[in-house]
Image 1 (cartoon, rainbow, N blue to C red):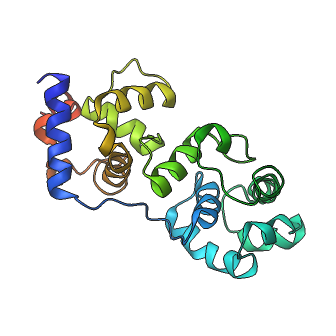
Image 2 (cartoon, rainbow, N blue to C red):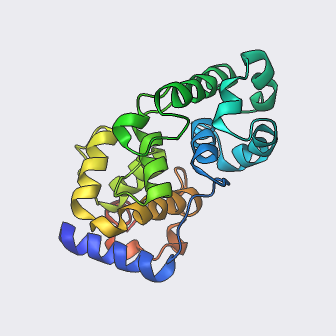
Length: 214
């Protein structure tokens, strides 16, 4: 199977079997989403969703969050991984949004990555989810799945290299959805240890299954 054939098979399977693919983070607006995504680094979406309602009740806007102190905010996120850093990042992010972007969450990757706590992955998530921009956030799931399936070369050693290969080969209109396809497949089927290959409809196109398990 050529790479083009593999991409066509995978995209067709997901379109038929996962026509609706969205983030599992709960949010109401770009402000709530960026807070949730910052908190989700190396933490489960489930834990984040249990944490954010109290934060948004106390700090319903980026302006109110910008006025918080570390001592005030920390208790709300102490159950999240790396709470000290994330507390500082959230307050720093809110301050910069207020001071530099007139209180509105910017909607370009170049602007977003200027914010404390926001790397390329977070910026890609925010822009693709809110604005359906053709940006591909590469987390551990996307990195693993794209290599196992054979969508990217084994020599793609960085998240950025994987991102570039994926957006080169996935139709632009589907990139924002393909991000969620790969994440959700990695989260529930093609897990890191003991992938559930017997449940997977992508086996005919999967290089990992053909080379390692067949």
